[in-house]
Image (cartoon, rainbow, N blue to C red):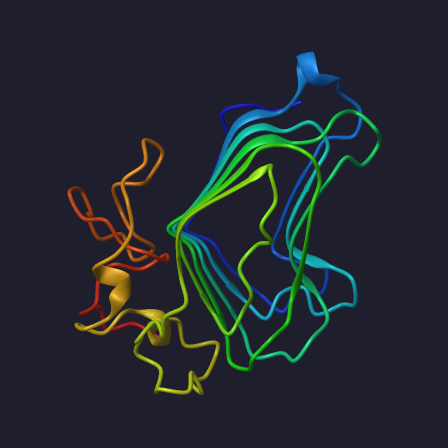
Length: 212
């Protein structure tokens, strides 16, 4: 089992099976994965295969923080955004935090979510053209936004998905005005810009970077 791992500053695109799989099917709760962080990553058109999920957490994971990631799709697909299940019957994930993430679809997309029993907190995320998680007793929703991200791509998000610079916020983007500080937030964004003292949503803070 693993503990205290950090997965950050990665660009994932067009992976049929999804973007992030955190799995544990052999350990019991006493030996579970815990204190794992996924932050400041970019996922583009992942989980294109039917019934796959962008974020898949299976087994008895404890204390997982998923922070400041940007997820974009222009696929009119049938995938899941989240799938958190008790695969292997070792116990369900618990204390999973999704915060400051940007979820964007080019098209109005009725993605489904599969969230097994456990405590899940969603705080300060933007779901644009995507549904927010369902209302359930084990899901805490704080500051869920349905806002256009106003990023360097044009108003309909019709930029080339492979040009990373298209995901950087414009000066008037709500991404730069929203967001909250959490203990496991990075002090640098995807571009390496120091973000100490700045709260933002998505993987990018630096709006003047000339990359792509």
